[in-house]
Image (tube, rainbow, N blue to C red; front, side, top):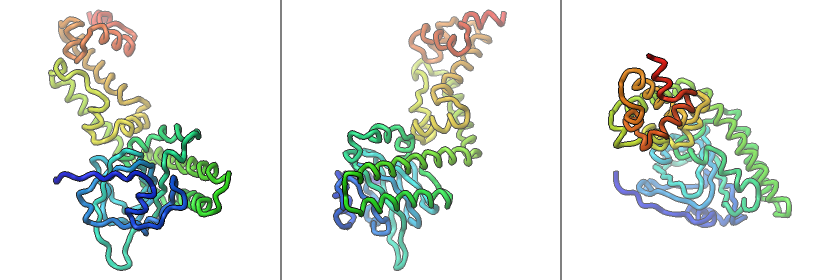
Amino acid sequence: MPNRKIKRIKGIQEFHRIRGLSKPAHPLISLVDYSQVHHSAKEENTNWVQDYYTIGLKRNVKGKFRYGQQRYDFDEGLLSFIAPGQVFGIEAVDYGPGEGPTGWLLLVHPDFLWNTPLAKQIKQYGFFGYSVHESLFLSEREEATLLGILRHIEQEYNANIDGFSQGIILAQIELLLNYADRFYNRQFITRKISNHRTLERVEAILGEYFNAGDLMEKGLPSVQFLAQALNMSPNYLGSLLRSLTGESTQQHIHNKLIEKAKEKLSTTELSVGEIAYALGFEHPQSFSKLFKSKTKQSPMAFRASFN
């Protein structure tokens, strides 16, 4: 794959200029009719980084969008989130007469949120962390709900700006994010088969890692390692595992670790220190502390229960 050049879009006005749109009514927020945004197939080898949040609701997009290492079709109503500083790409195609995508882009600069509760709160929404790996498919009813909110933003955005405008728009943005949060949780629930296959892969990857016999050199598996092995972001994987099991990714790693520790304690004569090192711990005390916190027994007490 050829190296992709990276272009940075420093602000919303620059986005409008690059895409041939008229100047935005406000420099820090814009609601863009996606049918007016044109991507050329010449951008195939370009990645983009932007300094503002983008919430996109798109339909009828022929090409694919790259978020991280994933590619997404937009065959259904699909909501995507891109935070400032994230890298994304567009694999566009040229449209024929009468063809073209539809939808909306809501662009929000962090300065628009400055000194408001949403400035901090927006970073807590998980989908801005894992949006680069997992976009949201919408039912018709869900799509209609979000389109209604966007229309309220458009109405306020195009009205005469006054002292209430920012607060009203911020309230609508927060409402949109809360609905998206609900819909993401629904997506976890309705995709149980796929998600449980992911859970099986988690178990398989951890099993292979712990059975490899080189933990002394590699150390313990990290959340980042497991997420990369599954081609997911750490936030998305954590949300998925909690929705299925009620436990975090780190807890799953620890559970597999304790399982292997119990096996070694009950079937070998290795000392606790030797087992700790074999499982990737630098200090046996750290292993013993974790083991006791998980089992309510020390490693030696656990071993003694088998004699």
